[in-house]
View (cartoon, chains in turn purple, red, orange, yellow):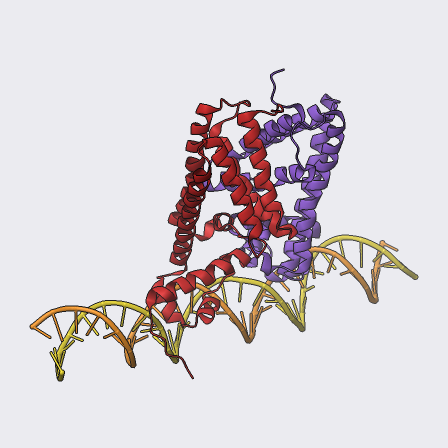
Length: 211
Length: 211
DNA sequence: TGTACATCAGTGAACGCGCGTTCACTGATGTAC
DNA sequence: TGTACATCAGTGAACGCGCGTTCACTGATGTAC
């Protein structure tokens, strides 16, 4: 029996986005065809272009959704960590540990960073998409920088570092760690890098002297 | 006057590779067409397929060359650094500084990491290409790990870290830092991450107490 | 409650273009005798 | 020194396929009167 489910546009749309996300992270945007997406979702070409006026608009929607989710995840994470601990440094260290654990528990090796993926296929996209990508990165920086300012008030840094750079470092290690994990097929590498970063942050604010 | 230069196959071949390298780093492999490469180099389609039996073979040659060059660069770098300094830790710290300076001096924002680029278009390539990619990463690890072992003999670590992970961290920061630099169009970010890594390494082996 | 119209979420066929690949042929250079 | 042949480094035309995009049409649902 051919099931005649009610057509809800938003469901189809997210279906396309879901399918596109995994495909793009696997093969890159250029190698992900609309054909392949619509057969997976179960619509026709026309249906796709009803939701997205062209392929570039798909990229934009994909990236926007990705950034929004990431944002949500971090807000959540810090809330949970600060609940357990009211000191800003120790809350941050807990959050990093939670983050590492989340990464380790993912069923498939790589969560894959769309920002990086888009970055390496730069010229394919419109300005808007590239700008969106930058917004994502700078969001990370602001988020962690404000946290470090709070921490530095209570714990004067023992190593002289630029706090923006220290904030960027986590983004760099996330992107780089994902690459390491993907290429070597060893999914422990990403969480290991988060934990190393944690050691560094602790050394910056608490020093290395035995307590 | 139509210049009739002598045809030297190896020159054409490296010409193709050069052109491919910049194009792939800009747009990704899938979006780089053979057509575009041959018009840049000045040969015809047949000429291309004389040198590479298919597009995948181009990818392999590209990656191999990239890894070889990187290797050469590091051997050179360490040799120079150790010439100035015979202590393994301080030699390493000098090498990191030289590396950061090299990155800062590059005319165009991003050197771009082919390993990462290939990584994000995984499924396009044959097994051989993907394996080659892993070899590149593990090469970094071995290189730095042996160096850290040497250092640790003389400077017992003040922070308990896995030295393989510490070695991986530089690869992660290189890849991640390139992404940060490309996306934000701020080429200072990459060298800044190398310098931060340097601070961390120093803290690991020397501690944070004022000397 | 019934009818008219508008909107939503698609269908399905057609399009032209550019892509990777093949292949028969060629003209210059190198080597053997 | 001259000739025969082989190899190198391509040319140039043709191929079929799949891609992104367009567009006229449709069938179900929602809303107004």
